[in-house]
Image (cartoon, helix red, strand yellow):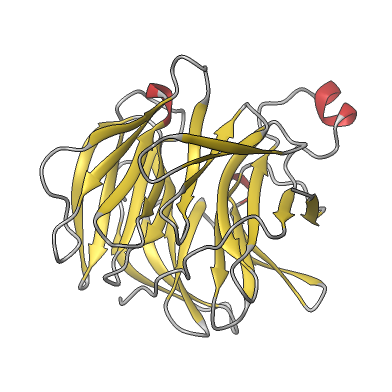
Length: 286
């Protein structure tokens, strides 16, 4: 698969990519620079915040829901205006939002974590029908939130555990019972970060520190990998008019000046055409 650079801007911590189906545009976050970014008609656009921003879901052509350090907020992509929907661990200055994705029922799942990666400081929440519900706590770096096309399961990982979990969902999209291990990457030493599930139920997982996106089938079996020129891959998403382009964000944070000079690809955003066939991103109903 041919990997090309989608955007040459170096992100400290690229994350939360979103293909907006109504705008036919690709957006992503740089968490540490507190910005949302997009390249439309060849020009780079950005929306700046006064707090960390990490992931999004689309609401309508103009609006996206954004997970920030302290709340869920609605952003107008046309005017830049924001409206806070609800607090998200706003009373805890040591945490921030991290990975997240819209579910097939119009809900929005969000992970939180310690700003300094404190062990067990994070949680996973679901925003649905105007209410925020805590689904699971005691996590360190929740990632890989995505959903199977048949609506039966959600995926997530706590990255330091190196195990991707699968969680059965009920008819309204709420978790049922306890999550079960789906892919265990401890033997290979990979650290799963963001993930997306395609139309065939395959799981595409970015691996922090391994310069790749790995693909697993619907039963968790290894399929293949897509190699990236940047070490710290953070999150993939399918986009493009026919949802066959895989975009992936990466991060430059924590790498030495020598390494950043040697390899200018760290922190860039990449595109891989004809990678597979993705699901359309679900609409969030605030």
